Length: 187
Length: 323
Image (tube, rainbow over the protein chains, first blue to last red):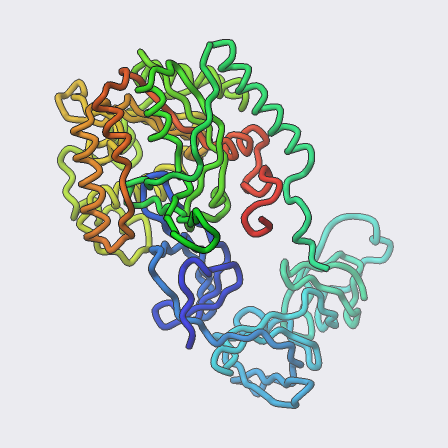
């Protein structure tokens, strides 16, 4: 694996820190007029999701991490693992609960997800920004209430529960923003 | 075609920059301070261990009889030789060059304003820095706090008693860093740049004065009100940005030569490049330089603060990666 000297650090660089792959979120050169130079880096641990700041001396290096973001299709969940396929190579990978994290509630079969691989193993799953999911359970809709405020919970086919307007019916297909977990519109 | 040919600074920022430069020149003209120029390409390099000079080569004949020259990292030595030559009050706006200093607030080639005031001490010079800077950045209130009071206030730390081990321990509480170092000033600088400076962000303009004697650089050393030796040095921070560094200047040639030797020794022990020190400065001090105070200010940063921008490339037309 290559080593990057601290003067080549930049946003998005993937490096190994204490055994975990991390991504550089923000890189700043710090040098008082008369003092030593340092590189202050905001890092995100790609396994745990923790972000923190670490300061590197000018002669320090960081080992590169073999991390790759790949577009993959979600296939199915066997109850324990979530399975994805690279639509080009048809290669399949299985992600565990830690890697999938909160993304599981937005996964729909055949949707394209971003799978982050470290040494070819999935370590995190990013669902599409918007997904379309069917309402499997909600209180009956209130007719004529399309304009007014007010909301109610609705359970979606993926298992997620979101707040939706009162006029939504069971069987409706909804567009959801997965970044905020919020209802956008009827699809 | 790439877009690297294009200027990074918006034209309005360049207009503001030109306007500020004109205001600075007017400020010094009304105060009878003479504008001067000194060499950018010098025979000696700065001694400060953590400033790396950019070396260039001069050839009396093309490709032959090579001589090393150094792009100046500050016009300080040369301007002091002018003072010793009888110039009186002087200022200069010039390019300064420093290896490796490239980032959000650093460009390896940057613009410096430096001026010297015979008969002033560092407190009088702080008054003048304030008079120059306040209208340019639109801040009227300038705080003044000593280095030791600053560390007491922001870190509850007593610098008179704190050991290197304690400084290292406190630094590690605040900063995730792998560092072993016996040099007390390196820990102090880390605390200053990583812990205190960010907190000064909300404090407007702050002069920090009476630095530790070990960080005197070219300032004279005096006793503070508690009898501790301190450097007659100040820095100005605006919105957490290090903007200016000034001294009640050392005028003792022998002491100057001794400090050069200390810097060389530190460079040797840390494996840093050794370059010729400026014996002409020592000669100038020995022949007699007037008592004076001097200050250097980063003009790119001053323009950044006037415009409220975060990137030095917003105020330099063609920064290093497009130079």
